[in-house]
Image (cartoon, rainbow, N blue to C red):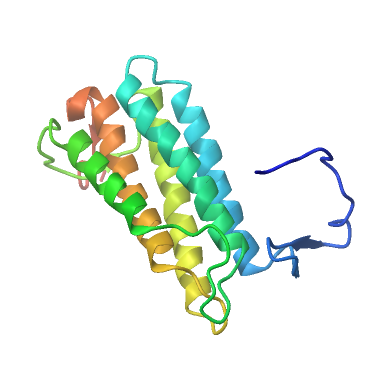
Amino acid sequence: MVVLNKIYTRTGDDGTTGLGSGERRPKYDLRIEAYGTVDETNAALGVVRLHLAAAPQLDAMLAAIQNDLFDLGADLAVPERNGKAERLRMVANQVDRLEHDIDAVNAPLSDLTSFVLPGGTPAAAYLHVARTICRRAERIMVELAARPDEPVSAPAIQYMNRLSDFLFVASRSVNDNGAGDVLWVPGKNQ
């Protein structure tokens, strides 16, 4: 159980922050950047959810995703060392559930005839913002994982990869199942 009874600690005043393991790192550290960008993705999803009154199933899916993103942040905040996974880790079942949700949301969508420009309904536009933040988080996580002694679990990276796909199909879903998508017209303004 998490207990937060004091919000400010002053321990970060020197430009460092603590990982879940207690280790101190500079606030610009790539691991901190990774879970900070996951948190940014989560905050963007909170904004999306303000616009989903007419889509309770999608809202429920996003609520589950927001919880998963806290799990992912916890996973990243405590790097696995010496094969020990002593803390909360992302698991394949979370990736599987996301794939199931992608398939469910994608099934009624109209076929794509061009790339989709971010826009349409407010919810769709915010989903595109969340998708691009998610992609940035994924890139940072992959860069972190490529460094020696900076493990990132495969399910964590897979989850973020699937999440960006989910956010794309969700944006089309709230755009009248794709009928309200704003499509790219190559060379339209030349």
